[in-house]
Image 1 (cartoon, helix red, strand yellow):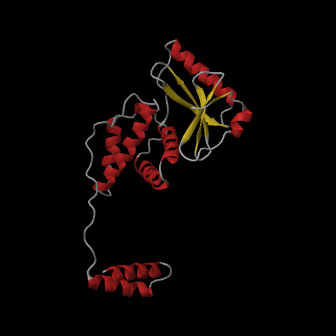
Image 2 (tube, rainbow, N blue to C red; image 1 turned 45 degrees about the vertical axis):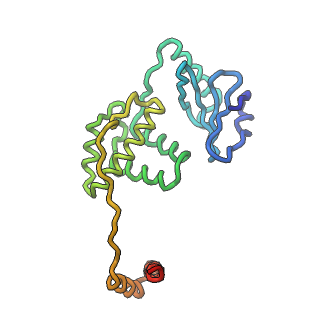
Image 3 (cartoon, rainbow, N blue to C red; image 1 turned 90 degrees about the vertical axis):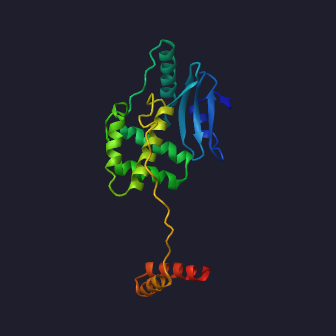
Length: 226
């Protein structure tokens, strides 16, 4: 990883990687650096201790270089003095940070998948993440009355966020670890009969634009394939 004397001028001129992320380490403070993502965002990070504990301090320029450096020194000193404790964070803040991280790592469709399930089924608001129990999540998941498949998707989204929280050291352990999953929805194997398809195409020809045209086109493609 590159090492450079970090300054405000340097931060503004750091190149954006073609893919993934690159961390530029500060030559004046060991273990302190800035992570530059493919999208151009810059986040201060600090690494310390024998286990190479990594913590994200915050984004530039919301947090200044001086503030980030001071925080890095504080975290390193707290570890040295044995004062390093688990960070406290609300569910709402964890959700926001998780989705931001997901945007950097995943496709937009995956981010939408997580956001939809988290917003629909897990409204814990400003409750502390450390205070949420396995039962809290189970109650929310069981409340997904739409389908058994939706319970599966809700569990996947919540468990993924909590795994992220463990990696980021907001949690010591995932309360959903080892939880028995719900059966995912089965793929449909039924297709329309010829008479059903003909009826759909007949209705599509008199339907309003643009949906009538779209269905007619899809039907024509299906007939052509058959």
